[in-house]
Length: 271
Image (cartoon, rainbow, N blue to C red; front, side):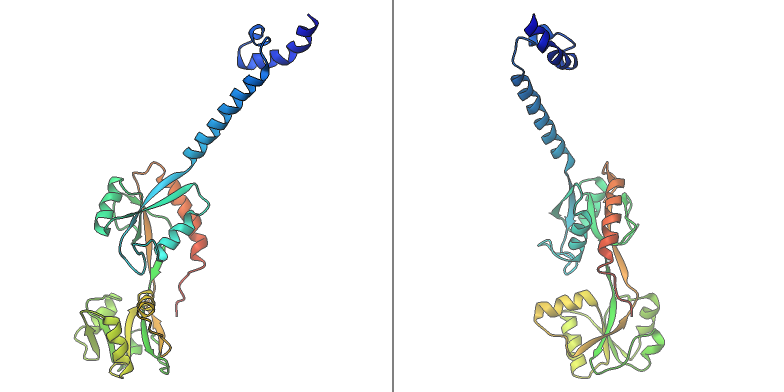
């Protein structure tokens, strides 16, 4: 009785919690096995919660170099990775052409579609903060002090533009049938513009700054003899979140927090 009396308080506390008070059966068993079972259950439970905590987001990856490339490079990809860093979401990039990606996002087969104008499609939510930006700029010879300051600043300058590109509606109207504007189409437009500038056949040309930098790097061309003479206001690209995702609102919140920090490091310089 003395042995039973000395051990009963400890076992009865365990039994009251686990077995509704039937301590007579367990008092005859060592508590070690019971503790091992309980510890095993806790480990399994923790492992299950960890696996449930990580959530995979399916991201459209299409050929939009230099902004988004099939090898998972480019500023669109960099922005997404930065935004979700430290979150419980894992990004899975899937090769899908852009047109099909829009439909798959709307149907819920994709979760994220980067590189799209805000509120431009149905069936999607958009964060407040942009993913990246494009900016059409004027490029001139390095010894040319001219700077773009609106249509009036063009004066009598001879410029080259890619045919069909609409920088702004006002600029597009200005260059139509303008004898001081050379409209280029076909292949290697950027290289042809650079050659025309070097030969003095034009005073300036327009190009998207990221595209031009990528093109020159790919061709191994240094831009020492050419300067950015200013440009149009940036146009901002966003990431669309499928409204069919059960956590769409939470994903948008994660994007807003992550992109707010990331964008401060890459904000466009407007001159």
